[in-house]
Length: 628
Image (cartoon, rainbow, N blue to C red; front, side, top):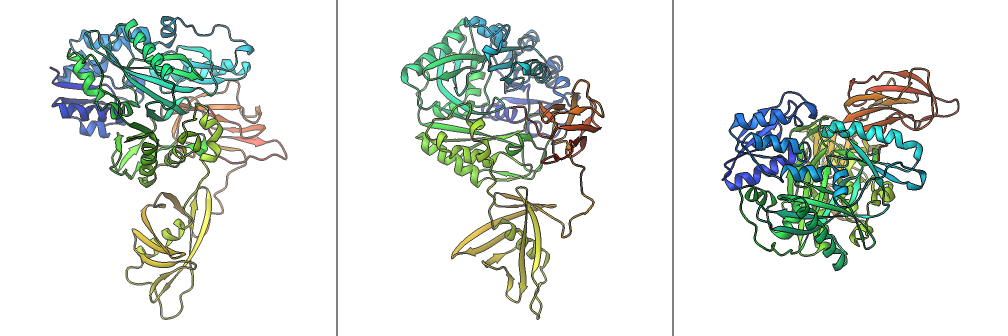
């Protein structure tokens, strides 16, 4: 029997595995990098071992250090989670060679399937060789790992070389393996996958389908089980193909076989030899704990001949610290508060007060809703996200809510091109129009505990706030009866709660403030100074770092004085395990270049200045990532 488990991972998945281990009475051991010294997964584990350093290549990708940590901490088993070394056959062998139990598939199965090129060969498929214009569009894809890293869509043959170079660099950083390959890119297909679970006695379960079509940067955003609207014969074909793939490599444990479905045809993508991020939707529908099943299989227990029966529907949304309106730019900072209604499941690696750093994936949490029908599950998830309290870095919460309520999604007509078509409309800001007034009244109440009214009629007070990139000015007055504002009746006001009556309807606004950042319900505002700083100006064409990160490279031959075209890539930042391309905002001359490879930059730091060609101006000073 397994009595102690080291999880070779971090964040949400480590916490999720620890939760099941605790329920089974199993001791838990965490590993952590230096930035994760006080991370939630480190705090909740029974023991923790430091991996010196910050970068994944120095910490969570160091198989030797993790095996030593397992031995030193007295672990008798290792669970890899997902990402990092979870699909590394050499790591699995090292764990087994150390006399530890590996909670995962055999190294031979990982080796056969973890490389997408070898997996395709095993399934009788092959990647493209010499790519010609007739092959376009194509997808450049990392042979190892997943999560959308090391993937690039190429639509012009002249872009292929740069896409290959960029994908190799990103894959090497994320997975320690820079191998990439090229395959045809299927437009507007559905991403459908099958969860499998196999034991050491020859039983293989196909635990239904999942639809993961809503993706950004080839990384899933919303997933559900079962995949809606599949013909029964296609569903059976997917199950059969998944079981066949598992049996072909003598698979053991939990895994996922992924397909791109176009019409009634299924195209094999890959087999992920690990637990998936979206496994909770399968757990909800089948009423099982996949981590507990992984542990039992690793202990040698047989599975029943047939899996449990699926019931109902589950939908999962990934809550990211990112700004979808700015090309999904990752966000950093303090997570002041994260609270989700208890009607849904929350898997997270953060607690209130934790910092969101630059070194790892920006996913804050997974939110999962289950109900008897798809429509009920979608409604429950959208409502829970809408009512959630999220104070901290900008997130994709509004995008998730609007996506779940979009007609294409509610009618199950979505595909992988969903965000390419609908991102502009889904990122249109819709702040509450009364949020600035509520913020101003709460601030006034908090500062006037001894009374702000005078015998003489009070002059209007003014406050300015930035909301969704726009400035709002509001006015209110102190009176003998309290605070007043035109057009509404102030029913109640204190520093944390404002109640306004608008057109005969009372509305409550919960208010929280952290420095100049104010949250009124689901609307985030920034308090502005009464008089703007006249010196706070930037030269036209200034490129600012959109997030903290590391400059990984500068475009070949780029120097001060170089002529550049609009949209030309100038340099690349690495942050949160992704590369972010910084492009010229307009045609002109590179008048300043402050960035160099290896340089650490902070958000808002000036990277370069492109002096626009005479008569042309830049639209805005921030550099955006345009790697889709």
